[in-house]
Length: 212
Image (cartoon, rainbow, N blue to C red; front, side):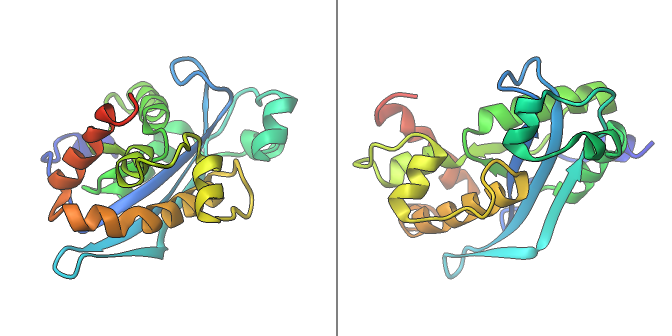
């Protein structure tokens, strides 16, 4: 099995390589709806110089095979058509490949609770356990770095910084937009943080800035 060596992996964190993750699903309920696609883009963090660089060559994307395609309205949203869903990669193979790609990298996403929940649920079903990687919500970093901005959704934050997304609601395009958003807030984050745990602690401060 692909899974067993990964399950035994020590719970370490690669502080220099992060992954910005986005998923597409059959609906808005991560506890019930199906995972259709996963995309991720690597980000290199140089803690000595406090520089963060997006690594487009370090990217991953997979469409999971579906026994029955999602609804027409859902397909119109994310563009993963009936044929692509039927010809996708079987869930065990797709999620094992994502786990191998992720390695020890922390996983960052906008409104990460959704991505974390749906990926964990499908990984448990397909592979027997969820990913051990820590997750962090980019929106929490945005809120702490720019507390005066009254944005909440990804579209609102993108509008605030003038970020354009080539194909909104497509996993890879959204991941790239989230990478750009992370780059915009990074100078303020880096001014307060010297390692991954500092970033986690900073993000946790969102609870005191306008609620959770």
